[in-house]
Structures are given as C-alpha cells and as structure tokens.
Image 1 (cartoon, rainbow, N blue to C red):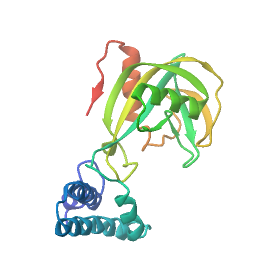
Image 2: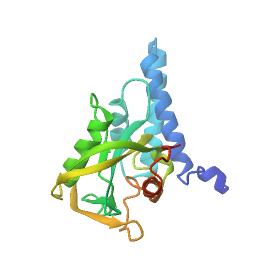
Image 3: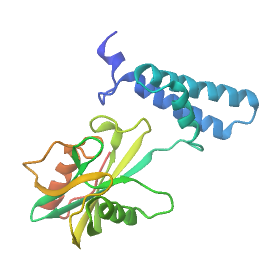
Image 4: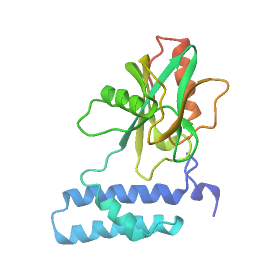
Length: 215
C-alpha cells in the first residue's frame, strides 16, 4: 500500500477521512429517508463508520454508533470559536487541563448564541478576563491544521478581541492563564490553537487593515 492510499493530503489517516464521510452520508440519509429499507441501509452505513473507528481506536464501536445517532439532521461542520487577545505585544493563552498544553481561550459554539457573544463568554470562563470582539481574524478548517481535534468536521473562527479588564483566573477546564511573546510560545494544544492561527493573529497586529483569512 503506498503512502497516498494511507493518508490524506492533510496528513490524517485515510480511514479516518472515509469514516467521517460515511458517517455524514448516513446521517443526512437518515434525515431524508422515506422508507424502512432506506433507514436500515443508512443505519448500516453508520455502523460501518463506527466499526472503522473502533478498529483503529480503543473505543467500542457500539458506543461510537450511539454517539453518531445523537447527531440528527443534515450533517454540517461544528463551529469552534477562539479569542485572540493581545496585551503589550503578547498573546493570551490558557493551559488546558485535559492535555497540559496551551491555546487561545475558546470552545464549541452553543446553539442560540451569537458568535461574538460566544467568544466573549468563552474568554471570560477560561481566563477570567473581559473582552470585546473587534474583527474576525480568520475562518479555518479545523481538520486541516495539525491533528483533527474531533471525529466530526469543524470550522474554527478566530476573533481579534480588545482587553477590557478582569483578573487572570483559571477555570474548571484550564490550569493557568498567561500572556506570551509570539517568539517564545509554550507547547500548543494544536487541536485547539495551531501555530498557523497565531501567525495570522500576528499578521493582523502588523497590518490592522489585513483582510480575514479563510480556507
């Protein structure tokens, strides 16, 4: 088997890309299925995707399939928001409790909340700091920057935020809060914040008129 058949252009395993696509097709198919035959066929597709994941991970395929079924409706990417906060030329990062690495504060978007409101809340919850969003730095394909953070496809929206005040305070999800020089960054939690994202933040600092980046 050659390298091209094993991996996608993003560096992730080809089986993961196939499983993700199968799951999305099955989820959308179940949404619009008109007969029992279609329902059974799409459920089997979802089971195959779960079996592929179970074969390559430590998770039981039955549990994966149950998780898939909790994602109803037309399959679309999830949305992750991040707040880029810079003070005296240094960028705000929080240390993730889950892996001990660092990232811009943020997380999954919640239903029925405006994007700008979400990033304000996430920054406050994870760092203790109050901010106001000023512009969108970029909209990135989260599954093509470093290792995918989740089986489900995701977009990452990075907002440039102005610091208003507050005291740096860790949360249930973070163990430390600090500002770092762009040339002396700690080890990044790349599923959450990739070096590419921080390079774009730095570029916007150098050029306030820079257009938002996008994939």
